[in-house]
Amino acid sequence: MNRTAEITRNTNETQIRVAINLDGTGVQKLNTGVPFLDHMLDQIARHGLFDLEVEATGDIHIDNHHTVEDVGITLGMAFAKAIGDKKGIVRYGHSYVPLDEALSRVVIDFSGRPGIEYHIPFTRAMIGGFDVDLTLEFFRGFVNHALVTLHIDNLRGTNAHHQCETVFKAFGRALRMATTLDERAAGTIPSTKGSL
Image (tube, helix red, strand yellow):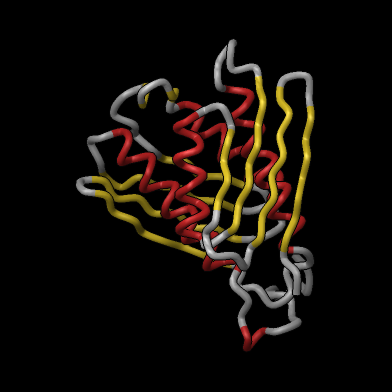
């Protein structure tokens, strides 16, 4: 089974290409023009063991909002395409990740129903030049286009960089769990409804 996808999404604000292999080894090539976003996407690839390429050009002379949100959207589209009909996947994934004083939990369901519960009490508004409000925009874009239910909770933390990084690491690991093929459920949809 070839669980790969390449999506190109162009608007008047951004031009984005995402390529993904769900059964990769964590190899990544990232160039979004937003260095902190590249750092967070690297966490998804490495901890999810996804091969991931993201190229983005956006109106970052205004701010990073459109680029970060549209990368989330395009990544969600790529996951939806790569996972296909969802036959044989575990479907649910969860992970707790610590980093020094910070601890985050992410739970995901490839339910076909977009929904997000997002609770990150960031201790400051900026991480370097990155506006922490854009974290929600990234995940909302992903959820709405991957068609997943996503719960994100930063349980503790005083360093905003650590808070954000634990979330992205946990997200990668939860994605890895949920998208893994379950040998015992080969060829079946993981739902009593028969479709997702």
